[in-house]
Image (cartoon, rainbow, N blue to C red; front, side, top):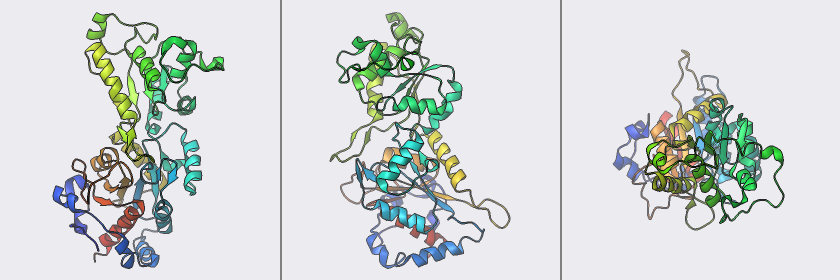
Length: 399
């Protein structure tokens, strides 16, 4: 049985402008029953796309954007609906990409890792990590010494080098040179010294801080970042006077790749994410200086990330043009589990949003999220994809 209170005409532009709060709160779908109607066979769906491909194009004129953690996978486990969901899109020539607040690896390495895990070939061109849009910062900081934070070992250093940053230092490298930097660190300085090439920038002033991924050693990383923020001109071994701390701006600009407070893995409840790490840094800095920490955010729900995602979609699935050569409207569906990241970002950018219950969002009943309501709420990613395809059919052929 289909339980919704919408009409296809409601879905013509941004959900933030077209759907009333009541409509959003009541969009709850029972999708297994849909198998007997719109999804009785794939022939119906393929037939629909054959009719709507008059512009001599090979792909559908709508796109799907997947979050990963809590939607397709959960920790080390691939959710059982993932293969069926991707199979439905592939069978119906629906272009899709992956937009995640995860990262810590180069896109090519992450795509290979994800392909192995899911068992479906994924191109790096389909994958946007939280730090992918930060590639654009390389031109601005090309000749600057950048403190790159997060991830395991030298992984994020390699990402930054791949993006074009020429001078990089990491908290681990600083710790290797100054073992007493953080006596309480759970990760002591390496027993096998880092190669000299990794230590050449430790004594250079820090010109910017960029958090590319979640910290694996909060105490050490917070300490090194604070040292840079309250230093004299980025020199990590100096600190401003008390008067300077309370009257001058922070010493270096700060960038975060992810604003999520929590994320979902196999544990029964959500776990801390980069946003919680940032909250700790904000509080410490304010207590030390009496001033608010200044920073720039990337990742979902930031509009810069969605602009980047749109450019990726345009490359892999160019917008269709009608017989008159005028570009046809394209609908983008974002499927996610985090209302504050996936849904808020999609709604704010004018995309349609589909919220699944397999990750961060865990309602007590059938309700939508109270602050960032999605266009639709479904049980899992397969239900989400079925809802998307069904909705596109209804738009062209209202029941």
